[in-house]
Image (cartoon, rainbow, N blue to C red; front, side, top):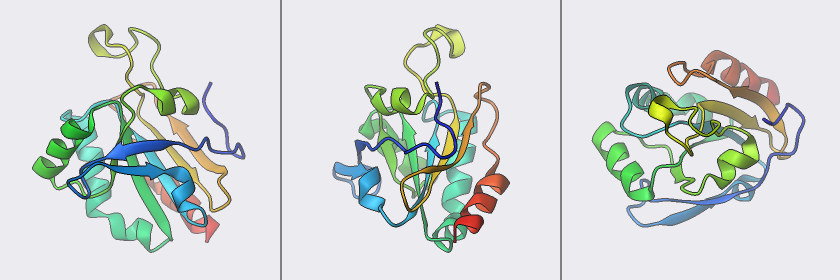
Length: 162
């Protein structure tokens, strides 16, 4: 079951390598007092995921101007994410949920065999806005991995929080 607006966002600690070149731990609690956009994506090196993360990176000033941090999360390893980010100019932190613990906590994981070619353990494309108090202010979980989140609504939600 996915989280709903008003629910307390589950805290997490995940590693990323793409922002520093060294493994760095990121946790939701690290951003207390900031709005956080969490973007779950199925897999690095896929066309829709690349489009999504590149467009968010290119337009990051829209988010930062609203006192928001953007985090991308997938089940890819930190090494895969780092290489993908370097190859595509992705600048937002990409966090490795290699064991699917955060995908499970947020209710975004495909049912076994539910992703393309029967792949297991992959997160659906999803977007959550967590407000400064740590509560879900926006939630969107997409069944179709070929669709992108509604970025206009995400930005509207962030605007309403400031």
